[in-house]
Length: 80
Image 1 (spheres, rainbow, N blue to C red):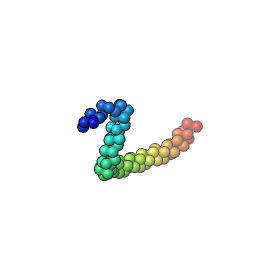
Image 2 (image 1 turned 180 degrees about the horizontal axis):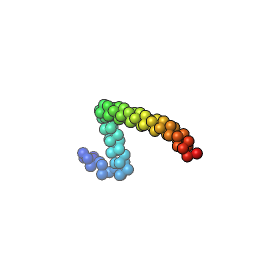
Image 3 (image 1 turned 180 degrees about the vertical axis):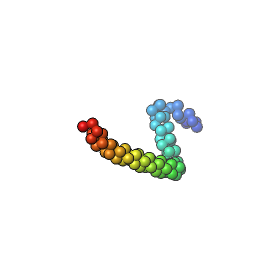
Image 4 (image 1 turned 90 degrees about the vertical axis):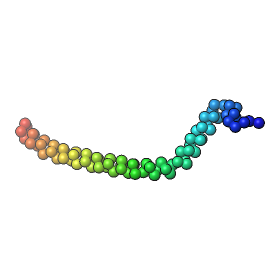
């Protein structure tokens, strides 16, 4: 007895919301392979550059630590 889209008016908002949610979920699942193909290289690059920055930071920290471990005894000799 219902026409095309009019059955939506006979559903309460909760059911409508659930239907929309399911529809969106289905869309996401269907387009997931595309998303993954797009996202993977970006994520790989992101991880690589993050790793690079981490290495650079580590080198800098080691350098600072070395400098400090040299300078602190000198300072202690000077002032103590």
